[in-house]
Length: 304
Ligand SMILES: *Cc1c(COP(=O)(O)O)cnc(C)c1O
Image 1 (tube, rainbow, N blue to C red):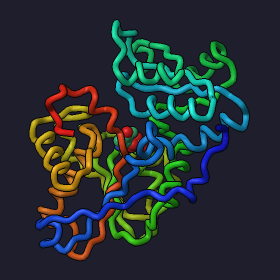
Image 2 (cartoon, helix red, strand yellow; image 1 turned 120 degrees about the vertical axis):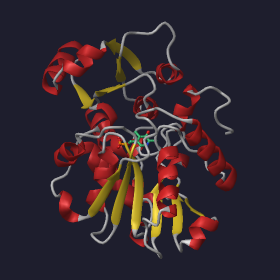
Image 3 (spheres, rainbow, N blue to C red; image 1 turned 90 degrees about the vertical axis):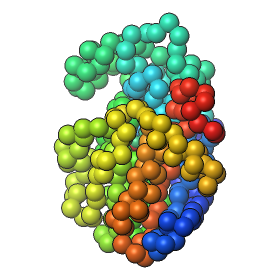
């Protein structure tokens, strides 16, 4: 296969969830089940990759991208490149380990070529120098920054509003890593809608800088980054979080991941408890997928 699907033709399930708390607060709460689309490229990643894939296919270039040992982005890029017959190189932060993480073995299994670079080099390289070095080494390629963090990634994330009746909602909630998905939502929602991002990172000190880098007109809509539900920081977890995720699964049969969507749903329910959302709000939470990340947990942490 070498033609990207027209995302307008893809319809994503919207699951309405209800319990006493939600009903008592006169809230309508729905989950956009992006975790169910494109097996293997679940969630927001396919959207962020969309225009990069398009270029790689049109110009028959390889893709080079970046990530850590548990990166959902690398996993998604590996699957997408396999589907669309694109050669791809994944540059992984850290020295090559004796045993590859399940994510990296998965990427390799999909045909992604893995290269390891030290954390220090990873950090210190400016994008420009890196690009020159990579072109010298690997030839012409499509460069995808880690997590798709770029205006091209944002343009892809904007396509999210094509796959569900976005205008029906007063609040749109999503987890935040690189900010790219949030930026796409900000660019594509209507001015009266509110976007609430749930940070997966502890000290999001460069959030404003990121928004400015990604978006031309951030004042178009109201958005808010909620920083209260990171549970200790990126990819950190607590028993309280696991307890919540298990309960959420028992109540609604929805699996969440412990890095992003579990924390977002904890936050949304907690904000409903704290009357953050006005009565009558119609909330949609974007389930951005990422379930492969749960494989790195001890097997008794989650019941699903
Ligand atoms: C990558 C990822 C995010 C973060 O998206 P950004 O666009 O980087 O902010 C959120 N949820 C899941 C499940 C992810 O894998």
